[in-house]
Length: 343
Image 1 (tube, helix red, strand yellow):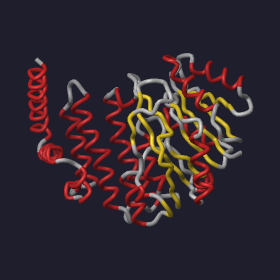
Image 2: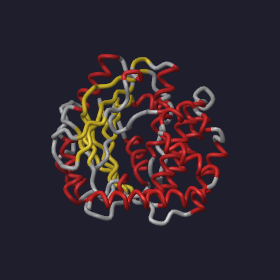
Image 3: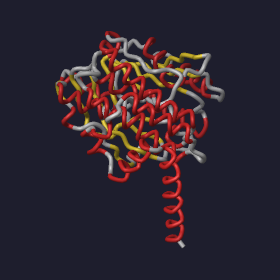
Image 4: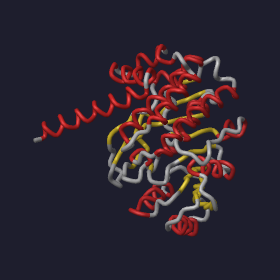
C-alpha cells in the first residue's frame, strides 16, 4: 500500500466539520491508500459518522476507537501502529486537503528520492476549496539533501506536520511518536522528527486548508494549554538529548525552547488569561534560568523578536511582579486609546 492517512478525531461532528474533512480524504486522486480515523473517546456523534464512512468505503477507510481520551498525539500514535502504507500523512479532523495533495507530494518524493515532502497551507473560515490566506511553510534553504546547515534551520522552523508526507520506514526505524495526553504535541515532535530524515522536498502550493473556527485550539487559551506549552518545551529538549541532537544544535534548540517555552507562552498567557497569576510568571522565569540562563544573548533570539518583546522579556526575567503590573497598565492604556480612536 502506498499511503496511510491518519486522522485523530475528537468531537468534530458539529458544523459539518468532520464530514467536510472526510469527503476531501476519500476523494484523493492517488491510488492505493488507506484512511485511518482514530476516534479519541468522542462524546458527540463523531464515532457514528466515522463508522458510516467505514461502511461506505470499507476498502480504504478504517476506524479505530480509543476508549480513553489520549488527545491528538495519542490518537496519532494509534494510527501509526495500524498504518500499512509506505508513506504516512496526518490530517486534523476539522481541516481538509486538495484532491491531489498526496498525489503531488508522493510524486515529488518519487521524482527526487526525498523521504519527507511538504507543501504550503492556507487559512480559511469557510468550508470550500477556495484558497484562503496563504501561509508559506518552510523555505528553499531548508530543502534538498539535508546537511548540518539545513538541519539547523529545521530545528528552529520545522514547519507544520500536517502538510507533510513521511516515509514510514524512517518512522519505524527510529520509533518516532508523539507526546500523548497533552496539547501542542507537534511543537515538540516536529523538530525532532525532521532531524531523523535525510532529504526534504517541497511542493510550492497551498494544498492543505487550515480551518479557523471558535473551537480551534489556537482560539481557546487556558491554564492547561499554557502549562502544556511548558511541558512540550521541556520534552523537546529531553528528546534532543536522548537522540544526540542537543549538543550539535545547541544554539538552535536554545532558540526553539525560548520561543516555545518562553515567549509564546508568556505573551499568550498575558493576553489570553483574564487573571494572570504571579506564581505562573515566576515558574516560567525559573524554567528559563534553569535550562538556558543566557537565552537573551542567543543570536537567533536577538534577530527574531522585536525591541518591545525583548524589553518586556528582560523585565519579566528581572522581576515577574514588575512585569505583571507594567503589562496590565500598558494594555489597559492601549485598549483605552483604541476605543477613543474608534469613537
